[in-house]
Image (cartoon, rainbow, N blue to C red; front, side, top):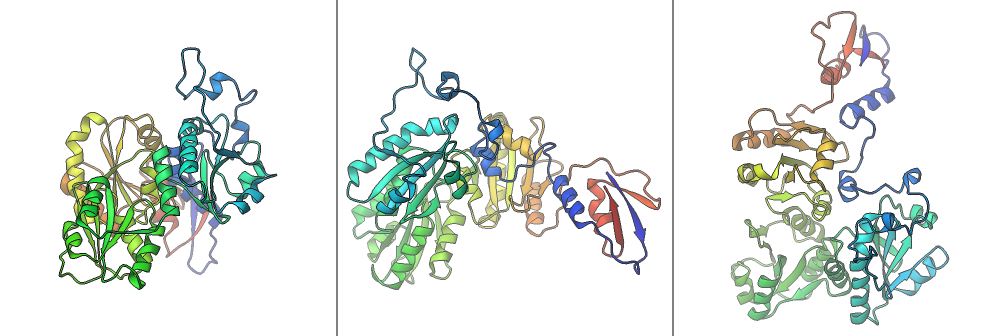
Length: 453
């Protein structure tokens, strides 16, 4: 709460920008004690301590069973099953640079011994390392790990903000890995980096295998399987690495992918084993545009928020989201309405379902947005960069959600601020400012404002 005095327009402008920015930022958040800047980090690390809080790290012996094995399967004696990490290289400051220089491709996990997610990842990471060592023994490929609690300089150099942080180095240049933390996902992701960016499809049998085996796939129908268009497709594939890209010049293959054999080439289609099975691309045949199209359309009409789906949601080029919070027992009632409302906004907004009574995701995300209780809630969210939120008032219905989403797109909604009630009488020379009248009083361009905080 603060007060303002109004000066005549001729008076020099006096505005405490720094204080005002601080108030506006705080007003837009419902976190009383801490502002969480990255919602995806909150989801991925809801039960871990951030690396930038060393005072919160567990003290004492990191080999204590209660600390190390709290999230792991244990045998009858209470001990963690042994993990064969023969093929996982242990790196430290002394050998980090030289090892990267000797290997073209290195995946590095920055971990903390007490981190529950790191412990859960360990067997899959070791299994992925063993599998890749057996199949790519001459590819200058390795999986490695760094204890970030010991190698703090390395952690700071690579901006490690949470555990585990996984980076993939190609000739010493890092990029983040945000895929699923399973052996299969890691192996598939690395194989795509090592193999051809685009696979040729020349027969109907090959096409059938893709249609039955891939959950999502991109196919381009080209005049030839080499040349400028093929190069652009390959570049797009490396930008969007969560989906397999294919190309064909065979009309019978194109037909199986629902492309008219007489269609103009190049043609591109995205296929998904979901309600919206086909999405055709009609933009410029450039790598960045194709990758953007795939990234924007690869998600279903409504994506359920989990630790596994959060990277594809928060890493999506579409930042604006409409979120439905509902308990599991209410989801059958509201999800069909939510999906129907999402259809006109495909490629413009992300529609996300949050299971309110999920301890893993629902509770921390609801806390982040200041949602209490179990009532079904719809809100709009601009993304982490400016982190404004807007709540749908009234009944959760198809038309209400569509109107709400349209207003969000057109920037016609009023942001929600945590606020005390607006004073019933506020006509004095000194005005009372609360969250709900901040814009009206402080940002009135016809007046100069002195704000006391």
